[in-house]
Image (cartoon, rainbow, N blue to C red):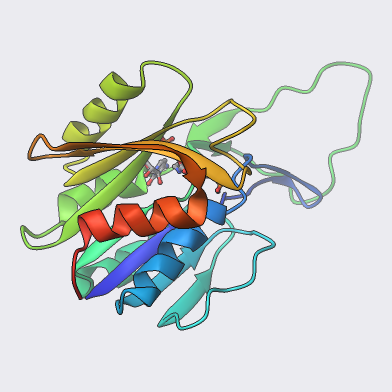
Length: 211
Ligand code: PMT
């Protein structure tokens, strides 16, 4: 099956030297892409800026920087895929008026106005055909189950992978992670703390069994 995977953070410019981003390293998303390649799938990886090297055997790797660029690539590729796994930590807000020249400091505070970016997963949920499998992630510091189930419903997902963030031993940047996979069918699978590569393999075996 051809499967789209997103990974890493996005970067939203404040001016030519500064940007807003988040703590995503891309490790979880790259591990998912690698697990799918190993299982024999055709994988298109859309990646925000990370320092990881590309998994071997990808069908293609599309590198993007901003949420808008990620949205454009993902929406172009998704119609030809049987499934998509959206692991990227996409910025929800970007500077409304990025400066074209470096902002120089002055005495007072600097106030930045932020505007919403596109919710890419929500757009895919609206585009999705009944035979496509759409998988989202929920990165939460609290109310994990409730927030994850809300996202699955709102974004028309088949699965949502809930993971806790804000702890040093899992989530962003760490080599390990723990997660709960919730299916639209009501199925729930818990995965305790383990290396992201192993977790990725277990998650992808669960959601995309066979080739
Ligand atoms: O990259 P690592 O350092 O390995 O860390 C892994 C991870 C913590 C980033 C990963 O496991 C994870 O949780 N990824 C999702 C991060 C996230 O943005 O979660 P969210 O709950 O804010 O978003 C929910 C879903 O909507 C996600 O599938 C996200 O890709 C998607 N989204 C969010 C915002 C937006 N504008 N567009 C989106 O498509």
